[in-house]
Amino acid sequence: MTLEWGAGAGGELAQWANPTARLDDFRPLLPAEEEVVAKLLTGNFDRLGDGSRPSEPDPARVVRAGFLRFLMLGGEEGCRPHEKGVRISGAWIRDILDLEACRVFRDIGLNDCHFEATPVLRAAIINRLFLDGSQLPGLQAERLEARGGVYLRGAEVGGEVNLVQARLGGNLECDGATLRVSDGHALLAASLEVRNVLARGATMRGGINLSGAVLTADLDCAGAAITRDEGAAIEASEVEVRGSVVLRSARIEGETRLGVAQIGGDVDASGATLGLAGGTALELSRSMIKGAFFLRQGAAVNGTLALTGATIGTIHDEPESWPGPGDLLLNRCRYGAFIDGPVDAGSRLEWLARQAPERWSEDFWPQPYEQLALVFREMGHGEDARAVLIVKERLQRQARRERAKNPVLRALLTATDGILGITLAYGRQPLLAFVWLLLFWVLGVGIFAYAERQGAVMPNSAVVLRAPEWTLCGIETSEHRTLLASNHSQGLAAPGQTQLDCFRARWEASSYPAFSPWMYSLDTLLPVLDMGQRTYWRPNPSKPGGRVAINYFYFQSLVGWALSLLAVAGFSGLVKSA
Image (spheres, rainbow, N blue to C red):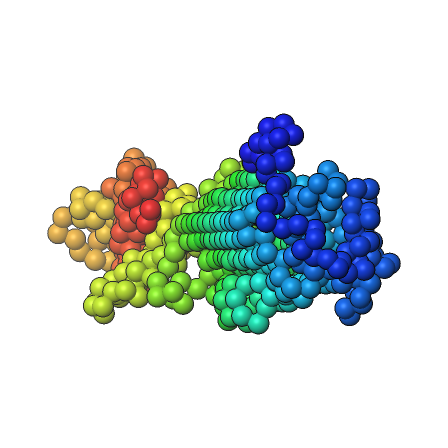
């Protein structure tokens, strides 16, 4: 930022000329003023007394504000300030220092001074303003333009510091300062243009308003104690910070609003205590943070952490610093990676579970789960990404069922979601269908093998079933029975021998395919296969174990079709919600 002051000595003098006031107007000078005039041209700080801030109006330290204004505006011939400007420490300044709309080319240095009234620099054009260590009722400097900065380091201000729409080429420094107001903001600097705003270790009762401000470097409130009974303790909506926002180890009682902000560096809340229970602790909704967001080292979020629609480079956090259940807003938040924090599905699902959409009259937010899965995949954690998407599907389908008003539809959705969940993990693990197929295959092998041992398997051929070698195998050799289609009447089965074993022992059955429980179960289960087993064999429900086998035969055929179709649908993505 550059301010135009005029060229050459003549231009400088023109800016400093004070045609109305004369030194004689202030005579007799007060003792402190006499001392100031005597040291005017040295360029050193004019220390009144020991240079410390006075606690009472000692006559040796009292300086009239009008006299200071006279000097700051250039004085008169023979009584002009040094090129370094007016620099006084330890003064008791009486009346109002009114520099409204004035142009002051040199520095204004009033360190460790006591002001009886609020200085006014509204719409003034100055070089730099030093009020370090001073005590003042406030500061009115709206629309101030300064080539350098404004310094309130260690100052005590009992009222509002107003820098609305001010333009500073340097910093606004309030390190270690104490600012207190009974109403409004202690530091009111909306639409401020400045390099850095530094409030490290400051105490501010009434908070800060930097909404719409432009900072070409940092907003640093590390170690500060900022409180406000109602509203935002830090109101910085729509702020543009080309550096970082530092809240490290700060204690902020009230809301910190950084919504719709543009932050070129980091937001560092490491070790900070933010917010009040029941309200919003940190508002970063729709903000762009190009660097990292730090929430670790014992940081405490007492209230809502709102990251709705925010874009963040990386997140550095720890579970101990996460907000409480229901106090996290992540819908439409995008981020690049997790650094120095949990990178596993279990921990991050617990993180997402801190959201409570119902608190905001919504049933479910799928985007935070999709974003987490995307980040996991990009970081190489494919299994964790899949686990997150499975939980997302389950919760999203649960929300859909709860929205269904028709009980029949709700029951149908419950059954469908249950089947898709256990068989395909909602399409996120289509290979799970093959696990189920394997289980049913092995179960079928056991059932059909048992039926075979019990003789509860018979040929699936009408010709064979009517043949004497099969029919007579159902009769023991000690029995006789007349068969119309055969001259044989004596049974063929040995005592205790099953009809199936007897048939297998006959030479007539040597050309008939052998029964295999393994192939029979596989042939029954997979509709796309034809092993020939179902063509030649089937369970016999009239024998022990045959009823179970025939029922399982029908059941397994249906399950095979269903699982095969589900596997195809799972691989094609048809069953996913999104």
